[in-house]
Length: 551
Image 1 (cartoon, rainbow, N blue to C red):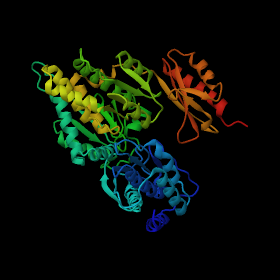
Image 2 (cartoon, rainbow, N blue to C red; image 1 turned 30 degrees about the vertical axis):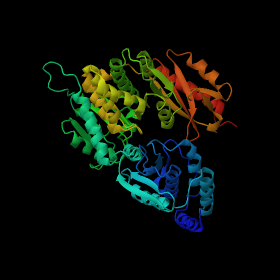
Image 3 (tube, one colour; image 1 turned 45 degrees about the vertical axis):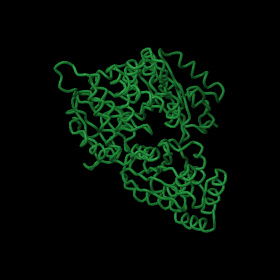
Image 4 (cartoon, rainbow, N blue to C red; image 1 turned 180 degrees about the vertical axis):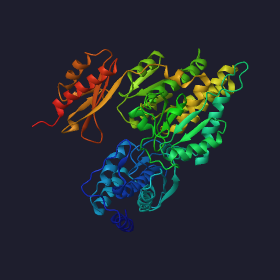
């Protein structure tokens, strides 16, 4: 870094002093906090984004300002790597370091040391490129300006402001640009609409059938960015019977009593839906439209719902993909490797169902970065969390094989199966979980199967479960193995958990430390809700005995 660069960086950094007495940590969701304290953090992550672009030979990097399903007064920032995926874990410690650097001099020193270690060129030989996006939060506009200041403080860095977009759109556009594919927002909508239409057109028609409609879908958009974007998608698919609620234009508050996170956790219908919607297929997006869950409202039970979560979406996608593969791979030499990736929070009934389908189920620690990374190891990798975040990944080798079948296969049945899987690969967002693409894939498969939402929900019955959290003195004292499902330390705690779990029919329980606060999370399953509650409560007491606040 020359004197001019150093001077520019020091001057810019002095305008964004870090909040006093607060330490932030870059996790799966990037940085999140009350928006009022994030100016400095976002400025510094703008610098990181520019450096990341330089490190990757000028590839486009994404920077998204969002706090997803958090309350409207919060905000956050996270980075999309050139693949469209999340920031490589190798750079997370650097993100923590620069976010918490106490003053401009310390910040510049950290940047110089890191650039030297990573061989990042800080001269004008390369141009850094960063795409900026934000959700609909009022704080987003000023935070984008802070990010631009950070990006601009790296000589030769160019920021492109995409305005208000969903988080998945930003990731998709980064991936497309780096693959030299047309990657505007219009291109995103065109690809989703065209591929969805292809899936519908490939539904085998039965005698006398004119269409495959399965009735109206109501979508709760969490008063977030998904409302505006789903409306644009709806206009491209004007034949789709879709009604948008909680778009954000009716005066509702972002994520307050609405959205995928609220619906999944509370198991009640969101505001804006009620008794008049009983019997209608419903879905909820989260605030930045990277999660989706489905549900139906139970009549006469205080807005209680039948929840169809990410596990059921994964199972639907896996069933459809396996059916197409069964058509294609009969006696063929090439047998694609299919992997279904879950975390310990996946309902045990879903894992049993997927295993009985003949699919390989793999577990990872909690967090999208772990799920996505493992899914990339397969020709077809399918992952979803119960919260409704997930996607399907296809290897280049598999897609090339499909293209060959489309052009050379004489069997129309096999041609169509290959076309369906190609269309799936373009409906889904292979960079990250995407509520809009997930919605379209669910709707296409339900129409293909001729299934109602209730028929889908009958794939299997969830085991009753309970989640609790226990405040502890030091969460790092709990060390887990086996994708966080087995406690290695402190000694004896796993034996105590095993003894309690063995008392319950179909019992399963694990504990894991929170990634953000000094609590331990407890997850329990059993054959009845009473048993699941009892098991969770008993294990919570064990956690308190081993790790609680005791003098």
